[in-house]
Length: 375
Image (cartoon, rainbow, N blue to C red; front, side):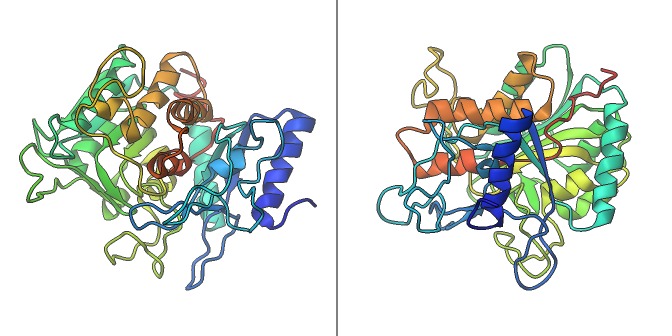
């Protein structure tokens, strides 16, 4: 079988499946094995782009970016040294990458058969049901620059869902708590969208005026998740650093402040039994934030706050833009968001944009029909 290692062999298999069977969706099933040493039930690919003290991070986009700009197999290792998407702390980017998804890829980061069964049962229940036109939005003030970025991004998301009822958990108006999120999801919600700060185990934001010195909202913590018992499973978008990092265990837990957790926030939310999400999207690394106002960053001729024109806010907004344009499957919306961000910000290459593009991960079934087939 072609491929230098297991990850590349899987990528070649996907390439052959595209060319022979015309597939559009790829669901990777398997996460990290428990233990002191990092081993995987299904391989990952690390991208080695240094930025803000982060040396490497997992990128499932590797499995979706099958072809380079000339239609050849995209190795992400064009210098052939076995280091993929290599950009060291000094010097230029060493590998050429197209970055556009050629298939729609998601992952169930399952660690055992029980988690697989949970996801299968939840997916069947979701797709045979009918989603509620309701979205839960959570945000606040993330940076010192003018503007309440989390609320601005959430309002932009809501603008793409004009026929949805929006439950706004905004730090300028109330406390941002997991109880408020649970209350919104208990009413039935097709989506829950958060825009703030994160870690592999925690998401939060600030009230205006509480940034320096920082006073954090209660937010959403990994130990809140067992208490979500909503009947309708939501699609969760958790905007913040490392919110969808899934190479986390009780013994290996980077970027958590030393706090061990059996699993990361997004994956735990998605695989939660009897409640929680049906899929979760977030970042496996530091995405870039763009607070303030420094011009029309996305070049569409409309000058808006930068948090909706670039960075992780722009990535998340494009997911909903895709849905508003009629894309019905979750992987298609993920692919649209990644592709549109790539079109606007991949050249000239910047470390922070590569982090944002490569680390935006779908922990869920990419073929999932949003709202179910009864919708």
